[in-house]
Length: 534
Image 1 (cartoon, one colour):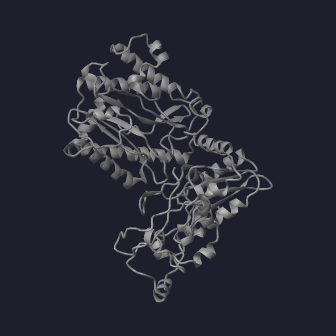
Image 2: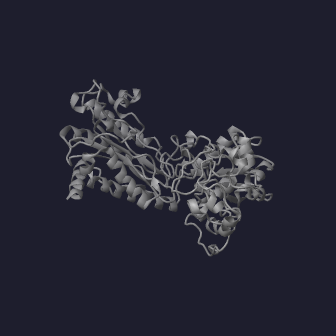
Image 3: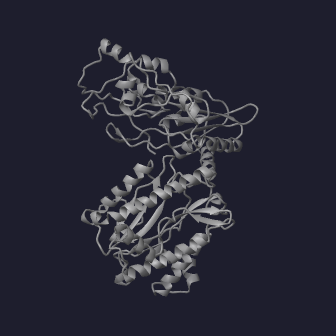
């Protein structure tokens, strides 16, 4: 991710009230109050950003909160400041239950501790990213941080401190409640009255099951750290700056590789989350089928919006940009513009997934006849892809090589292309030279979890060269894509793209299709669509 930049001087009055000038955090999770001070605004370099986050909370609270340039109110009177400080109820929450994944997160931290004994481990959650001027993208915590804590708050940092007797002590550095004494809670753009209440550190300790400290102290603590340190890079430039003289790229890469591989085998909480994601995704696909007539009257955007509604109602978000590819757009693997027409007689390739509230995503694809019925050539291509996918799913089982399902699927597609006269056999030669890739293009699947392409940074021997184990979840998603301008195939094929994708859990005795609530066979798809349309 790109390093976050300070906000410009002039900001927009979004709700007809004074909007404070608040720079985006670029260092180690500065508080909203500190971010609005003159010192933070001037923090244009990594070093300055780190200084703004170095734990001088008391000093920061004494500094005035800088207002935006074109403010409607010229100043805050002493009388108003006094009024705003007083007569607020105590809203501290007591007796909070641990997060449902807290015990699982603790076990993951234990595995991390065992892998890197005697080393300090630093895992940031990340910072807000600017969309435009003073508006930010919705925050999504770094996968590594959320996986190890269950927490999803911005600017947070997990630190594992090595103990002298072995093991590590885990501490979550978080933003505390916004300050009511200095006016941060109502003057600052990230204060409570602007963006909502944060949990207190005491509340967070109950939920996360570990000590929680003020993140404004984190950079100072990290700069004073002695001994070997590793940090997950790419999420918080200020954290990395505080550790710049203590870490190496090679050692940090080893940390990221380990955390990526650690996620390969899912625990029972994760499997339940992925099942929930798939179930919600299936309902989202049903929603789409019910409104295809409205999509025909508008565009692919109607499909995208319909699925997004389901994702936001039942989950956190979509797990990735929805691919709502109608007609020849289905031959573009990641068509996310979704601005084309939806026409009866064409196919719709819908590749979408709901991300749950705990950040696990489904990744499902169905290719649907917009009219409700496949044409003969569409059915021919679809059935070939279905047969290929079934061969791939059948190859998913404990003890099998990860590559087995890919090779099984590709063999079926190669056989079909030879049978149709599009490639010259024998099939073994086609596969050896990978000639089928002109129309199959991509690999047949990938790991799935908190990231749609989960475990992506794992070492090759822990991923594509690995052996499947119970608890692994992967997609099986073969496809055939005949481009509209492909002169090597008969005209009737051109503009047809078909992909079928399901999320497969490796079990003790084989596999389970987590997304089997959606039909796959062509005749089942037609009957399902007819039933939904009434």
